[in-house]
Image 1: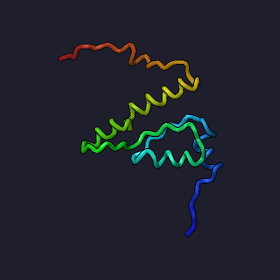
Image 2: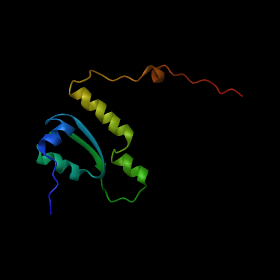
Image 3: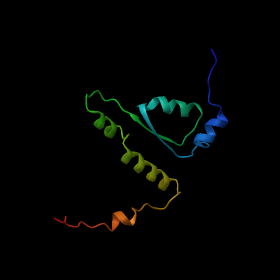
Length: 106
């Protein structure tokens, strides 16, 4: 049986060198992805995946609890960029900050 491996050069081309910030959304257990990065000693990973706590709940609740929804991943990406000094601070676009409620016309 032939082994299918991702060469170190290929891995680096996808995820950058160690300490490069990587926000990874994975619809499975987080430790599967963490071990993949750990084996290559990549220290920039922040993975969002399924977190088990024994409750039976809805698919939506699982995504929110596991911080696998888009809101949590976007928030994590911005916070990572701020902590790495890539951006100083984050701002919403003008369409959001200057939005005002207007009554519906009948």
